[in-house]
Image (cartoon, rainbow, N blue to C red; front, side, top):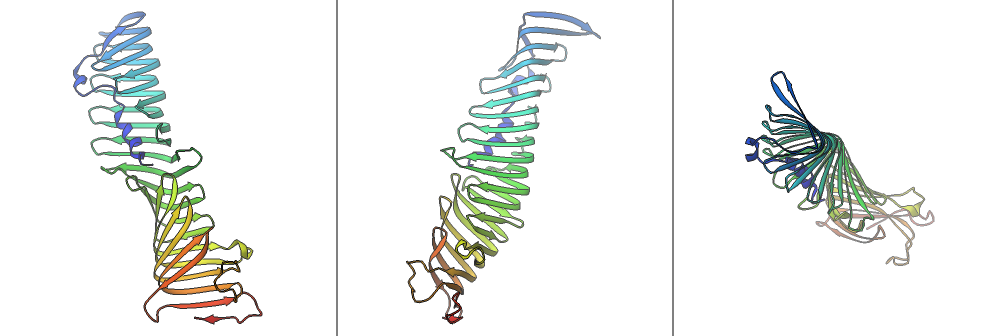
Length: 372
């Protein structure tokens, strides 16, 4: 995802002529057939087959064209290609205004810059203001990173260093093996600034293997591979449901590598060995999560830490004399390690007198409660 900002930036690179070239006239290089007409004291050239035109560094090729010489303007149709040595634009039709330096492309629009490709139904580029507008079946691809961004409309303002994709915007990125994908969706995605922070608003959804998240808002920071969910954030990860005021997700490539939950932090997991009747609960002001390749490794709970989890009769239990039961622990700080998404070890760090532990056996023949 580190190259997400490049998708927004490509929108500002579609201009086929430089600013200096704007003062030059649009010139006809070749056409197999030319029909010259005089319409209202204006000379109009109708060009057919193998049409080639230039303005400055820009080279244009199409099947047909109408060239208004006095207006320095042309309408190119049929397999239109514009190329300036750095970028190429293809479309069914391009309205080219040489004086105002505005290009309006319609129908199967395709812009390529290096290994990045933008597709749309309609695109307008203003060279003087460095603004781009595009709409209809937006698709932005990074062929190296394997990332695709889609939506219904897009825009970029180079001077403001701001770009957006909106209309059910979806970002999909495959990992290097193409076996796993990261998918982020929302009504609108925006990027700006030197770090190209990306904000996603309204109906945010994140899908990545066993990780599924939802919120009202999200931010993506490509330099640190972080996703920040806010506004009723909720994250599901292999049986765990995580909630809080803010959830920070860390990624390694497209893999979940942990994160942090702030404000009313909570993780609830359902123990499959309990017939889906028992829930393990972690609560605190902050919860730090360490994971590797989408698998939970360690959890640290801070600030009014609370833990309630089922103790199984696994062979590696240290206390083999007690049956299965529910262990409830409170303290300032809890550190828990996991294997196969089950608690294997827990440490309580707390000021004297502020920690408490309660063990409740599930065997009705045993004593109901043992306090520690």
